[in-house]
Amino acid sequence: MKVLKTIILVLLALLFIVYGLAFMTYRGIDATLVSQDYYRSVVEDFRIPRLIREQLMEMIPEIVRDGLTGGAVIDDPLMKAAIESQVELISMAMIDAFDERWIADQAALVTNDLVRVLDVKAQGSFSAVIEIEPKLAEIEKNIAQGLEAYSDQQLMGMFGAPKAFIPMIAQQIVSQLGLPERLVISELVDEMAPGSIQMVRSYLIMLNTWLGFLILILVSLVFLGVCILFFKLSFGLLWFGISAMLSGGLFLMVKSHFSNLSTISTTGNVDFSSLPVSSDTIQGIITFTFSKMNLFPIIFLASGIAIAVIGLLLARNRELES
Image 1 (cartoon, helix red, strand yellow):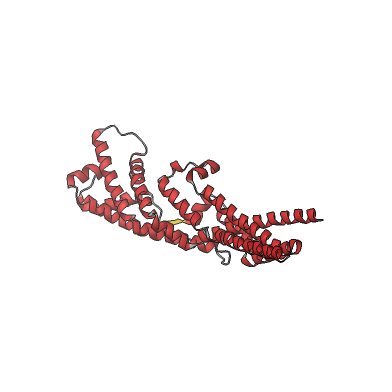
Image 2: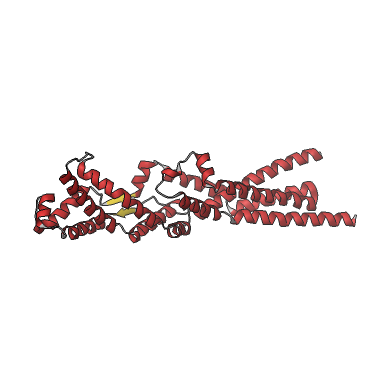
């Protein structure tokens, strides 16, 4: 009978540990994926707008050059020089328009909407829209200002029109860039990963249903009651405390193992070197993200130690009394 009780208790302990790991994982997601404070910290602390702008500074000239040449190789030195002048002019006009402040504002807009969509208590769809139209007017203005530095002869050679036609030249250049007036984020997400937002939201709703605080308390009380019933108070507390310690400790160990960039790269077969962000920055974001998941495993570990110590003290007192 004692062996049967031990087997049952071991199985229940394993279930409790697995449930604890699942609960801590969900609370970790809740502290990152659905927390605007998390996104704000990542954007500000790791200077994401600056990184994006630096990437744009590298990408825009190539995009403009391909647009002007149609991807063809230009061998004529005069034509090549004229195209490079246009590339520099247009690229600087675009880079100046897409400043860090604007990028930060768009990041806040998108992440605010993402958090609202992933909030299981709220209803709604991903509706974030980045308005590009005001920037098109700014780019046109920047191009016009840049064209003022050229002489009538130079403008005639480049665009076939003198300085009096600068506003029309700038307007024509912007129209040829083919930039959209707005970016609908939901359409971009559906194009790159169809149904991903809805899938993540459904998983979060399911986790919220089965891994809430009240259910954790109920599971803990039932497991603690079974432990005490099977092994009386002292050893029941000891068994429950050890289980809680194992749950918290295992989570911290697994978290520590996967908080390394190389481990994630190997396990998930992800090539982080192909991303336009340095490995140090990615590692910093990963470390920061996992640090946001420390609260509940530490609570499990600390409470487990405390309960186990109480159980040991009660068992020792009972031995002394006997």
